[in-house]
Length: 396
Ligand SMILES: Nc1ncnc2c1ncn2[C@@H]1O[C@H](COP(=O)(O)OP(=O)(O)O)[C@@H](O)[C@H]1O
Ligand SMILES: [Mg+2]
Image 1 (cartoon, rainbow, N blue to C red):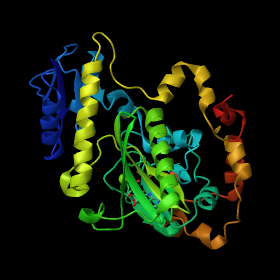
Image 2: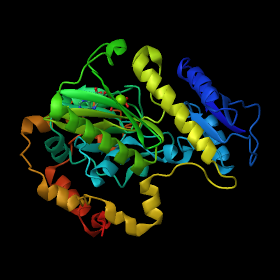
Image 3: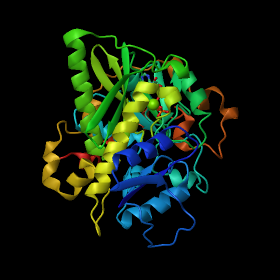
């Protein structure tokens, strides 16, 4: 008898429906239950062939339990090692390599320095950052959001530079991404299970929370069929590359092109009260189906977790040739960017020059201080950053 466990937090509809469905489907060969933990001893196999993890992103104790379980052969969905390593900025980088449209995005150092670091910990970081380049590249309005996070927490729409610096000032130690706004005509959330079962849900993020799934596609006929096929294929490609077996991908459609906005949701909302009955039925059915498949395919004395194409290709280098789009070097990015001159007014709009008294010198990381230094320094720094080392990222 193969045993499937589900590890979960406050949610109260999906886990029980999942357990019931597996137990109906398992035909005495597979059964499911809530994971039970009364001790966690190193190197001990607690007997689950499969565990669906819905909560370890919030409970580090569970994440460590799951890594031990994975070592003992449990097929943990999703792979706890990959989930620990992953974040949204990397996701975007990988998407570019696979030719999937994503909004233009840059990474920002945290406003406040991490605990137990000092100014000296940041000597590799230029102050100020090359804000002129960043603003010209991203444009305004823009989105600013944590590079690792979810649930719309600390997601900001920023109107201009002043607004950006003011909101960045609220983000403490979070590492943020600044991202081009996709002004979309249509939006979709897509469940993907086992890197093969795909369910595309029209979604309206501008509606009240409980009405976000109560919307219709904006396209029809052949145009719609084509869009759905593209979204389906992008979803599979992303999840294969990342190695997630349980994920949602969000797409904002602009001028008919689906841009992947958020595709690092390894414990996505599956509550009947938010996703609605039909979507709930789909996710329960397919999660149970996939978990049973994984349980039946389980092999003793081996790692049964899924590993994405990125990891697989990293240990098998020739396959890197599959990448569709070689990533740019910093020098290439600089050359191809259309650089508009930044006005003196815009320069003055950064916090360090505008209100130096308010800048918390002791807790603010150097790069977050704004464009206080002379332009010449920025240019020289930019030149240094385009030197031979920066070219090391080029794939051959
Ligand atoms: N680049 C963007 N362009 C347009 N809307 C965005 C963009 N980024 C985020 N959003 C909006 O903000 C919402 C939350 O952002 P998202 O990246 O999905 O973060 P989270 O992981 O917290 O859900 C999205 O559902 C979307 O409505
Ligand atoms: Mg989201």
